[in-house]
Amino acid sequence: MTQFSLYRPWAAASWGGPLDQLRQEMDAVLNRFGGGSPSSSWRGVFPAVNLYETADGYVLRAELPGIESRDINVSLERSTVTIQGERTIDYENQEGVSLHRRERQVGRFRRAVELPALIDAEKVEAVHQNGVLLLRLPKSPEDQPRQISVQAS
Image (cartoon, rainbow, N blue to C red; front, side, top):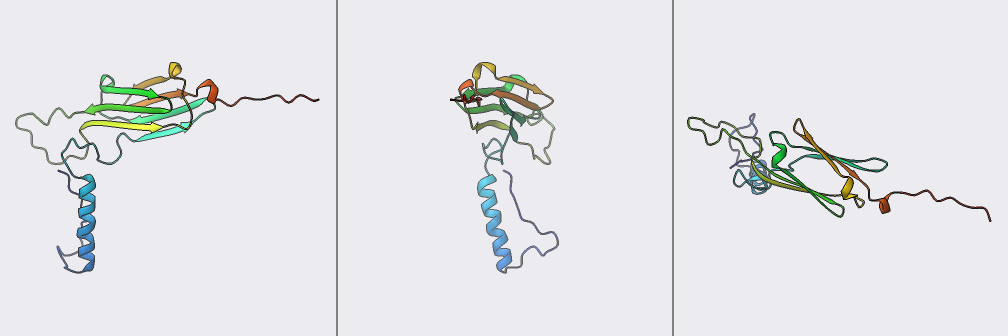
């Protein structure tokens, strides 16, 4: 289990004062949210995503290092895109291997992103290359801005 600590290498191990008590309480809060088994669903936000809008839609980039394309599932329901998958580390179960530090998450993940407009599901493009998933999400025709011509009377 990962343990977070607001460790102060410059200070004594324990002062017993109010600042030390505050540090211990903060450690407990961090561990409550970040603790659990290695396959816990919450270890910060994974995958990290960037979402930006273009004239005709949205582009979503998700960082998925170490995950094969076949292990990524992308779904779209109305204006919510969901990315799911699982990351494993193959050396964990090998005999004679001792893990000294693990900072990369392992286990199943699910990330849902609500978009500001409806998406044209038939035209969505998904490309996974070099650990980055790129989704091009065109706006539905009814959600795209239209120019209305004004006629003189």
